[in-house]
Amino acid sequence: MRYQEDTIICGDTFELLQQVEDESIDLIVCDGPYGVTQYEWDKQPSIQAYNLRLIELFSTKLKEGGALYLFGKPDCIDFIDYRPYLNLRSRIIWYQPSRLAQGRLNYTNNHDIICYFIKGKRPRCFHLDDIRVAQLVELEHRKRCERVPSVQKGPYGKTKFNEKGKNPGDVWGDIKQLTYRSKELMSREALHTIQKPERLIERLVLASSSKGDLVLDPFAGVGTCPAVCKRLGRRFLAFEQNADFVQLGTQRLEAIEVLHEDD
Ligand SMILES: C[S@@+](CC[C@H](N)C(=O)[O-])C[C@H]1O[C@@H](n2cnc3c(N)ncnc32)[C@H](O)[C@@H]1O
Image (cartoon, rainbow, N blue to C red; front, side, top):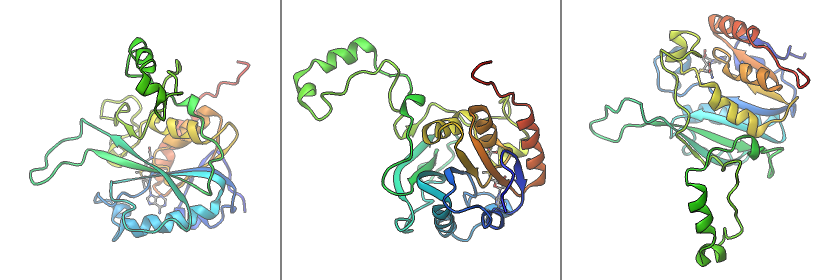
């Protein structure tokens, strides 16, 4: 059976995944349980064991070189051996300085992580030019640095300032979490279940897929990743068990006008 692409399908992701063709997916954006809230679906006895089960399942669905981005708390893949299935390339820190800092006995957690895995040794794509961010150092200062002999002779001596911007690195503090006032927010409940900002998902989709590629979102929520995919010309398969979220996500998709290159 083939699922209808480019719609959000209501159901349990573990059941729905069984019918997804092996080696058919270019990119998976997995923003599922974190194991921290009181929602039934988020209460996992071991979030690490849960994530390992997902990683194993996803590895069969990805094409060679395909990418998985797995969201979670800093310990979400601690002490599990994912290496038989996928290769971990980066642990991106999504830093949110505005998160309430109420800890008294330890350091308050103010970041999520996004684990970037690929299947095999080489990514199918990594479109760095599409996700470059502004250089923090000024151009003139950077150019002066490039003339310093110790820099020229060092391991990065041939690296030149790129006018288009730099690699965003693996600590992302430039994308804010949504608030009740964000125009993008689909519902108050969506904020509690951590609806993600489109800019965040957009960076992943732009880097690790090309136009026409098939993206899987197994925990679609209110449809952020599907919306981004539709806007950027990617095909998608999206699953979500909460029928109200499916409805909101579907309305969100309907409101997106796709611009064609000759428009
Ligand atoms: C963190 S939220 C995803 C938010 C989404 N990225 C967005 O921006 O709207 C996780 C979602 O996974 C859904 N979910 C949890 N377990 C599921 C399962 N087994 N099958 C399908 N959906 C599930 C929840 O209902 C929730 O909406």
